[in-house]
Image (cartoon, rainbow, N blue to C red):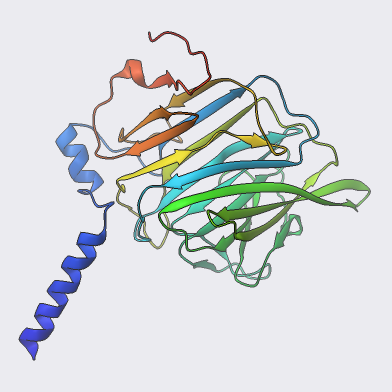
Length: 313
């Protein structure tokens, strides 16, 4: 019996490892092999910026399609952010999907809990230094997590479990109801994730000061390996992530350029382990082994279909 149990354990472990298509050597092993030093986490392995022809007035919605080419197990800390940062009337928000969402179980609790894969939607206060409370947060269901803190600048956030896998999803923010709070007109924006079959999974809502908004003339996305109390040191998963063309108010936004940046300075510095390339109108982030990057390629244009790009340096 003991021999059978040992064989079963070995077999199940081998199968689990075989199914992990993201598996690579540890970051420490890869950094040593590449002759580089690991920075402190979190790691923005790739940043993308789209430059618009002009700001988008009377903003009502943002959408971006994201495709993940393989299942990413939740024993990695991977943050795929189709909204790395957005600004409306000077107010900033961001969000995406994570392998390990965490936060407070409700507005009364301050105990951090972890609920695996999910979606996230966060905003900063107007000056990033004035605390912003949880009255700015609306949960979509009882399984949502919330947080309001200041360790990344004063922010408020809603997160909700969502078991995303290999496939294509659309991360959305949509303008909703308005209300007056202490004499100030405010508007709720709702975050949702739509799968390839069209099913919509609502994450929750955040309140913003104002009623008529202008979206600034650019947008960003990123892929990040982050740190949690549950997994302080995550491996870097081998994965390809494709970001589509930004859509605002239901339309593809007119672009001037798309640019790649691989951070090497705090607070976003990362070991070099990713390349960004164009695939038609989309940007593909290929994450793999750590290497030593040619510094002339730390920033480069992404030659999306239909865009004129500057010549290579």
